[in-house]
Length: 206
Image (tube, rainbow, N blue to C red; front, side, top):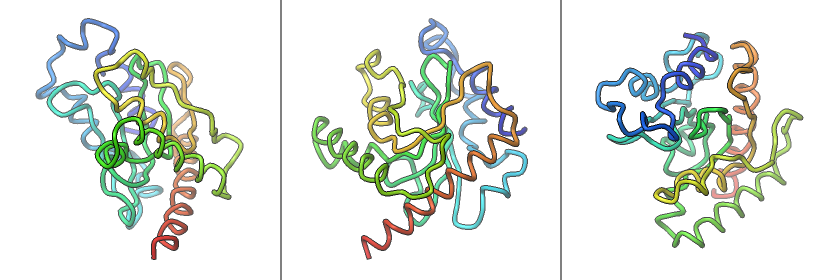
C-alpha cells in the first residue's frame, strides 16, 4: 500500500463522526483499526522517511472510535508517543473531508501539567515560538490554524489540543489527494523541520 492509498483507505473506511455509523460500527477487530495501529510501517518506500531513530504508529482510539484518527512519525530522541514532545502526524478531520500533515505537540503533557485553560495557552505559546524560529519552512507549509471542528465535540479536548499544538501543516482535501510520490516528498520536507526542531530543542535543554 502506498501513502496515498493508506490515506484514502482511512478516509473511505473510518466511520464518519457525523453519522450514526460512528456509534454503530464495531471497533474490535475492525481492519481500519489494525491499519491505523500499524502507522506508516507498511507503506511502500518507507525507507525514505522511516530511517534510523524514527518510528511510527497510529490510532483509531482506545477501545472506542477516536474523534480524530491519526498516523504519526516520531523522532525517538524527543518523542515516542503522541502524548508528549514533538512529532509529525496525519490528523484526519472528524468528517473525513481532509487530512493535515502537521508538525505538532503532545497535548496530554500540557493537559496533565496545567489546567485546561493554561494548558491550551502554553501549548499555543510553544507553537508560536517554533513558527517564528524554524528556518527550513517551505511555501507549501502553513502556519495557519488547522480545523478539526473542535467546537462541535465538547466531550474531548483532543481536537482542540491538536489545533493549538499545530506548528506547521500541509492540508490535503478528500478527492484531491496528491500522488504517493508527492506525499512522500512532503513528508520528507516536514521531517527535515522536525529534525531541525529536535537539534535546537536538545541544545536548549542540554
